[in-house]
Image (tube, rainbow, N blue to C red; front, side):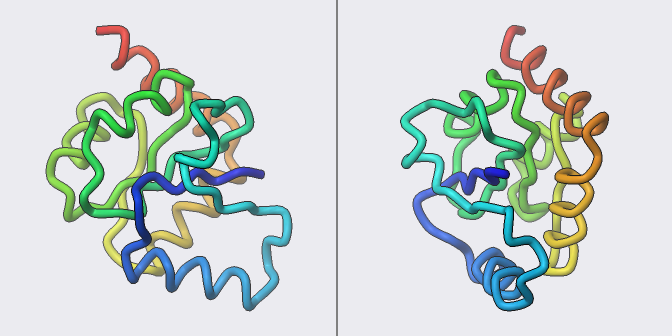
Amino acid sequence: MIIVCVGSRLDWQCADVIDRITRAGSHPDWRFVLSAWLNGDYSEALLAWVTDCNVTPDELHPLLAARVPALVPESHATLLQLCKTARCGLFYQSPDDIEACLELLVSDTALRAELGENGLLHTLR
């Protein structure tokens, strides 16, 4: 299960969550991969987790076009508005929020598909 980390770095909250999940060993099948490493092939991506507060909507756009739902920081006003308007993802405020959203998006196939489809529709407008 590939969780795409969008951005060139990990904000501290995101690094903390990855560390907690890895140490707990609760999800050994989850793979956290930087989007740049995928060279545009998002075919196996479950979700696009914005892990860098400097990400622009243009950086998220290719993932949305590939029907990959987004998980964005609530503090990023532009991406928050995008998720709310296009209904293409969830948003987080704290490490606990991140973990809960990851769990939900990975486990709920129907929600992931709906958000992914909405992301694609947004990119076609």
